Image 1 (cartoon, rainbow, N blue to C red):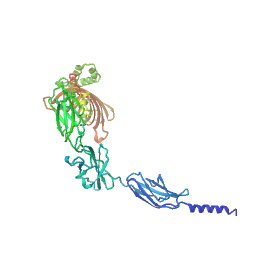
Image 2: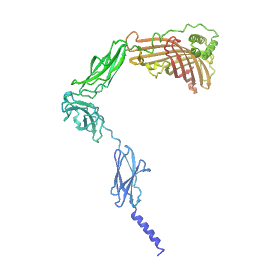
Image 3: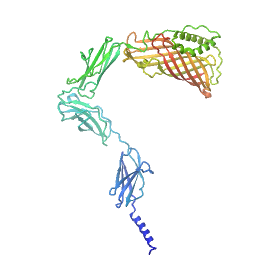
Length: 568
């Protein structure tokens, strides 16, 4: 008997495990919504509870919810639209959890789009507003699944205490009744589709019921500035876009603050221009709004505008003046190249030092001589020796470049902004192994506005055109295979035009202005045999364009260039 006791215990344990093991739920089904999944299954009445598992991968059901034993369905919420989810269910009995059911999947539906915001929402006419009612119209919605409209209203902007349902066919006329007399109401409209999705609200319509004793809102403000020669343009901000009975704006102005004795009815306009005003006079402006019942709003705060003479970037005649400084070149003999070499090296060492110390005339003389010598050397170099650099196949280089121009004068940005991108074309001729003469022309055009004498930007439009023309004597040195560095200097002669959008004898200024420049850069040659001689360059240059100090304004500055070239 003792020997049979262990066997009996083992049988009892096995029997209890079979009898009390939790059943695996079956017939699991899923019903997908936009952000939900309804899980349904067949359960076991003996189970204590169920567990619902889900996730976005069949092998990673990392979410679990517990469901009461009397319920065999569960709604998973907070899901992402258009996403596939995997779900399984288990049962729990006597703290023993069954295996998972078969894993099944379903995809949540795509996010539903809301109807378009209604357009054309407004009263049907001024006579449609009475003491206790107002009639509205709007454009029919293009949505095929539109169900109805919601018309909201209340006595505070954006806060609606009442909503009325309008059928799809009511867009041409919908009458709101039961309003209070002499009261301001705010109305808005939304569209609702058959799925219950509601659109954004239409722009508010403001209605004053009869008898109207309420003034419209004051204008949003007044701004003004110089529009032309001795003229001021004033702009009034409209804050009554949704006011049903808004009629117009009155502009008040004068030369004494607080006593604006002139006025003009702008009607539905919000812009006014005063012409032929005395230079130096100060004008003050304010504005109000009025409705069809004659109610006038309070006035805006006053602003002032001073009539000033305007300034251009190219002021004349003192600040910027033209004039040619290049004289005819005399012939040079075989000594020319030696002079070019010596002059160039002297320029590298002393060019900017002379300028800093105020020896401007000496710099002018040096550059003129440099130009003459370089031109002579170029004209006499009939068969210059070819460069001894394999990637440089000839004595000529031609190319184009794009630059970023930073004007020396800080006021340039006040007139024409920061971002200026000139384009250039250039031709370079080698005189020897290391020396070459470069001719370059560029183009820059910018739009801006004139400034007043006090520095305030006006509304007078202006256009600036610069055509920089420059000659450079360059020294080139091979830095490594297919990489050549160079430095150069030479004279400039720039064409400048500033055109103002006003009539008169000074509407356009044209000048040719002389100056000088220095540059440094690197040429990188192609290593491909099929494109031998082609390459790119990076260059920085500084130009001093002020007629060698005779002009107060230097229209030059820094240029940073990137270009492509062909060496032949």
